[in-house]
Length: 474
Image (cartoon, rainbow, N blue to C red; front, side, top):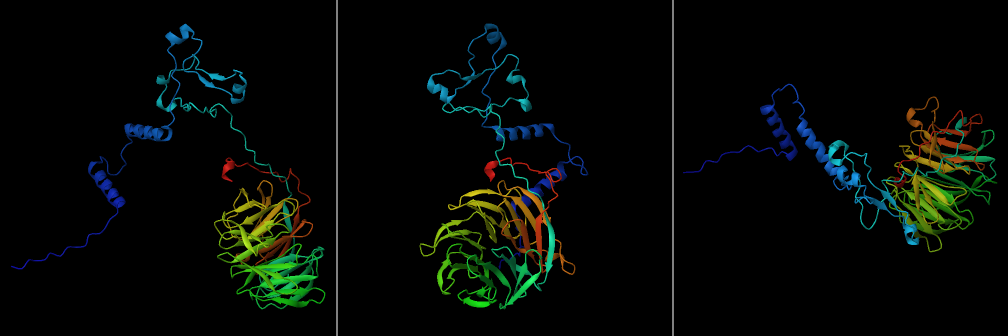
């Protein structure tokens, strides 16, 4: 006789959490006295739950003082209590001076067994080899440096002239003019005092991402998404050299302060070092795993510092064939902007997660800024007065006190009529040579100039500063 096969329906696999909730619901449906209401709270279960939490939290801390019986200790007036807590001072103990701090229970204190469980005296146990005075010492107030008062900054001029996003900016060493590069593939030179257009240079076939003006020559350098790096002679207003070698768009550009060296970084994840005069590539600083989007140089080691979209910052040694000296991995997001302090051997780096401050030349991490801008920060700059400005993709322009990391002003740019609200991003900013004026390049095709408010006083704009509670967090 042939065996009949019984077709079984597939059983739905359920997680343990789902099965537990289903069992709880069934138990509630069976045993609950009122189905429309929650069961009344059980004081006994609440007491058990509370005692368990106290035991888990303070299980390792046990009371060490058991108060004496009044009939024996108080009437007899024992001169040395058996449970006294002696905390000797280490320096005086070496000298033979007996000035130990003795903490003994007083007769006015209640017994421990008379105190309820919620009001029980919890005293930390002391190791026999190392006494702790943390229960007796006052908490030391925060030693975080108090910020210096800075007047707020205000927008006093808006310059229009570009036909695309303004992506790059550089000042003339004489502080008479500044140049801007745009997505309209042009470079425009503006007068600092009046804000009027002086000159327009054409030559790039894509947006201009980086600009730099030489302090020792009448040269200006530009780089863009067309993989081109150009050297402009400002006496003839034309391109005299081009540097070929990048495999993709060039995002950042910097000039060495003492050597005739040009540094460019781009989407090919390489920072290239060029000889300005011979147009030859000296080094290709390779090591980043993603786009190199920020670079600055110093006359001493480390001479080159680069930030990348791989969230790392690298120090490079030009004397040892461009070897990596140090890699900083403190950031979690792309390092799109860095700023070197003009006086101190320190620099700051900005990312979408935080703004961090480091020392030079060792790259020691100092602290985070005390607020988070919570946007992609495209540019940052510091002046000699210790005012750091950071600009974000959402049009936010924040001003910080460099010493303490306190954010004392949060400004927001206003898009020009006819532009979208999403075009409020700021792509570049820079102080002039004196540090008294700030220029921002924005996505609404304008250039805005900022200066300090002369009418502001500490009374009209008070300093609202709260030091951080836990200094170890920074």
